Image 1: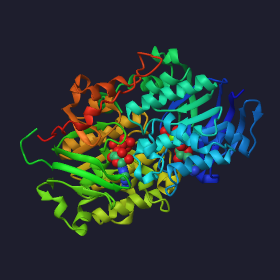
Image 2: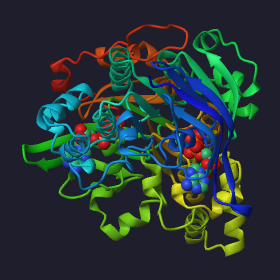
Image 3: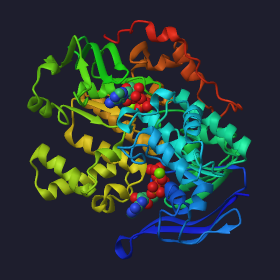
Image 4: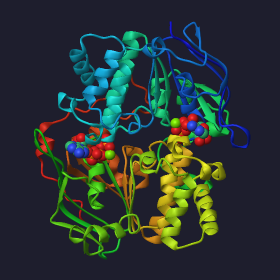
Length: 256
Length: 288
Ligand SMILES: Nc1ncnc2c1ncn2[C@@H]1O[C@H](COP(=O)(O)OP(=O)(O)OP(=O)(O)O)[C@@H](O)[C@H]1O
Ligand SMILES: Nc1ncnc2c1ncn2[C@@H]1O[C@H](COP(=O)(O)OP(=O)(O)OP(=O)(O)O)[C@@H](O)[C@H]1O
Ligand SMILES: [Mg+2]
Ligand SMILES: [Mg+2]
């Protein structure tokens, strides 16, 4: 069982005059084995929700539940075996002086796996990186190649919950297709639960059964995938998102 | 487009890296020109898009090597300039918004100071004027609370805010050429539209040349004038952006086919089947 519950979650940074209320009163639930999307304005608090669950945002109130476990301020190793995150920024999230092999071997060892060599190979295979990449360093990889290493690292402990922050925005569309197919297959095979942030509505519709739309720290609307495909939305911001999903429209630029 | 001298004229550009397995060629002899236009570069991950952009600015770290029969910026041979002359071109005449926005910001300097520093260096303006201009710039890229962002550190910014800050800094210098590497990949559509319209204005009103590197085929098709499609360090196809959806090369067709579509759900996305012959076909010229 690895459902996720967020109940009246608020997250803030700093205090007094410089306090930033990044997330305000967010409430939603992701059933075990489901995939849930977060879309919305840049800076609206999407990454912050994921980071709060991972224990990376110290100041929060409300309730977060993984499975049957109500989360406190600290996370232990068992938590990180169950819940893994792929970060938005593949550049910052890989250690510059660790080779791909080191990155993956270390995570595997940390979580007590034995057959490291075979698993490293299998993980690279899963994310479509050939054996030639195994001993490269981050600066020898393109943006998309780094993101695939980050995904392989998250998959290494065989988690039951994956938090995916823009997992494919650094990938080209063909690798994106491979990674999305892979993520979908993995979810079905292992009954994984996904919480996925993306600004690409087509990606969210492809991956998720339901989605929360965020603006300025708040969830302004919840949509099912059917709502999305039928362009059924009530909030003006959501309508705007759905309408501009198909490319650059100079007239929309005029209207802003 | 007029027949005037192009801003950039590139012939037979290569970028190579010595590796343990021998020399790896990231860019394998490509040729193209850039006029006062919006030139898109698309292609799969690792196809050499960023290396092409960096090579123009001679930002390939040794032991990486750049060679070209011609690498001219408004008639100046960039390969002949010494490092000092090159530095005057970088950031002032030719700017690049890097794919890794937060990485390019100084982590121990507040955002406001960084923008103001560039502005003052560029215009010699005083502190107060620079402050006002920096706020204006952040507003132009739809930053909600520019005063807070001015005082913030880079790590306090969301992914999309980082990208917009980089674009704001680029606008300060008003370059002749802007190389934008995935500049909007972390932006939601409304902010993306805003940022693109800024670039659009710079091209149309100031005659800037824009190289727009992106994975987003729909975006490139709707925003750019011309598109170069790269595969394995070469250009496999060149087309007018609004004809991108009619592209012929099986690789381009494959890229188009692998897009998820909001209104056409499918269980599995199509995956590209690569043909070894694509690698060997000579590069198509993107010179005009
Ligand atoms: N460490 C921090 N200190 C202060 N403010 C922060 C910090 N991290 C995030 N914020 C602020 O919280 C708000 C929400 O940021 P968050 O990263 O969650 O946005 P996001 O929805 O993921 O945006 P994007 O789509 O651009 O990545 C922003 O205003 C950001 O500046
Ligand atoms: N220092 C290096 N040593 C060896 N190979 C390198 C080095 N830097 C880059 N490469 C390789 O050069 C190729 C082209 O890289 P480039 O960054 O231009 O790709 P890209 O088209 O921008 O990809 P992406 O869309 O993923 O950003 C990649 O296969 C990359 O692994
Ligand atoms: Mg984010
Ligand atoms: Mg790149």
